[in-house]
Every structure is written in structure tokens, then in C-alpha cells.
Amino acid sequence: MRNEIQLVLPISWEPDRNEFLTALGVFRGGLGEYFFGAVYDALFVASIEAKSEFKKYYSVEYTNLSEYLEIRYGITLSEEKLEAERVFLVTWLPHVIHGIYEDNKKDIVLECINKLDEAHNEDQI
Image (cartoon, rainbow, N blue to C red; front, side, top):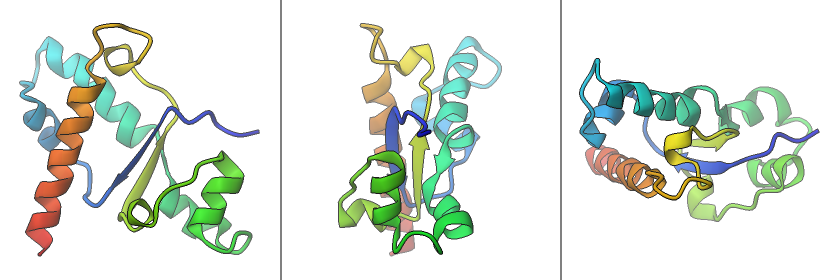
């Protein structure tokens, strides 16, 4: 049985809760941390980190990561996205970013993640 994947996040940095919340402009100890801390947990803690899962358990069974993602999860990623250091497969979305809610903040969160990814990639050059 496959896990239903809600979101795929290929990133090239080590997620850090404080850095994520700070980039969103969320202060510790408040209501924002409650909501967006759950977002961080869903995206980076409770999700499946596909690259490490593949290397650890499935690299003998599947030829490469692309084949594994396609067969196991029905996901096709571009070569660029496959080159990311980490590929998170998110299986649930908190209300604050879930698409069924009209005023969700998913786009803001994804924009923030992209900016963090770009910043970390610039640091590596």
C-alpha cells in the first residue's frame, strides 16, 4: 500500500526549526509558533525523506531514486529536483497550509522554503 503524498519538497539544506520559523517571521512561544511549528513538523519531521529511505532500504531493489519514486509512490521528478540533497515526501498537511481551506498559507510557506534553499545554495558556492 502506498502512502498518499500531499507534497514533494526537494531541498539542498538541513531543515532547522528555528531558522524556518524566523524566515516566516514567527516569534517563539506565540500562536504563530503553534501553527507553523506544526507545519515544520509535517514537512520535515513526519514526512518521508526519500533519498535516505532509498539508500537505506531500497537501493538493492530499485535501479535508482527516480525508478523508486515512480514505482513506489507514482512520482516523477526532474533531474534537477532529483539532485537535491533531500527529497521530502509529505503525507499530511496541517490546516494552515492545506488546500481545502480558502485562506491557507501554503504559497507563503513554499516561497519561504525556496528562499531558504536559495540562501543555503549560495552559501555553498
